[in-house]
Image 1: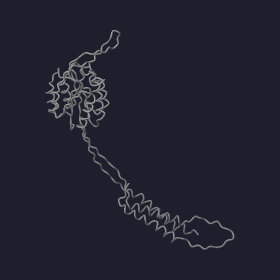
Image 2: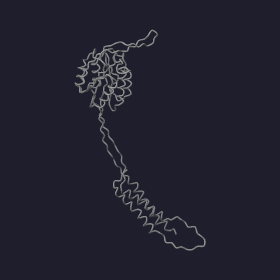
Image 3: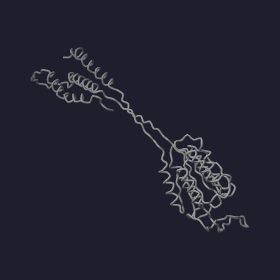
Image 4: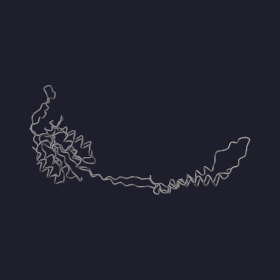
Length: 327
């Protein structure tokens, strides 16, 4: 609450002096008579009650003249969200455990999950690919559905291979009709394109044509790496063995796609680097939020004005009416 004409409140400083004047002016005359027997004297003084009514009415009138107002704050938020498609490789090589004690796929899924939970007001979709692509979730604001789709992405569900071009082309197709101010694809893979119908460079040009930025991430180490292979034992139990595998990456291709679309290329060889990559993307692609704040003031002087006038009228009626008959 505020007072629009607050200097009027300075008149309240005169109230004590006015009270003193009223008490002196209305002090009743008295004559002291010696009495043999003490008499009980009433302590009730109607004139003091009259003065209290008048002063209360005057204080309320001064407050009303100061024009008290209540304020209401209205904030209008204009949010310019970003459409993001996450494209993740789920080929067999994503089971390799060369980044930490977990597989490449597990680390990638955990990092994607943290990235999703850190976004707001952005539509995010998810495409998984190996030898063929699959839309796990279209761009959505329902992050619960998106996180469940991310959890369901597993190696071995799709045809084996690494169809980078097909995965990227499917993500572009999902975003080409988007009206978002900024559209982004995050492509994560641990291998080179070796299958598919769409050339990765062509898919990158397609993304650039629609104004979609592509951030490419090459994850894992190159060369001879051990791939864990699970198979059933003779007693029905799961036996884990390792097989040497030549991991081939094509960073030049991923760099070309990122550069042609206005994105950025990242090389990741450990879990900490992957976290920093997504932190960097999070900073580069910020959602624009504009706040327009308005404050509205409503006058509430009517209540003290009415109550003050009522007290003054009541005091005047009692002064000129019933209390004049009191001895």
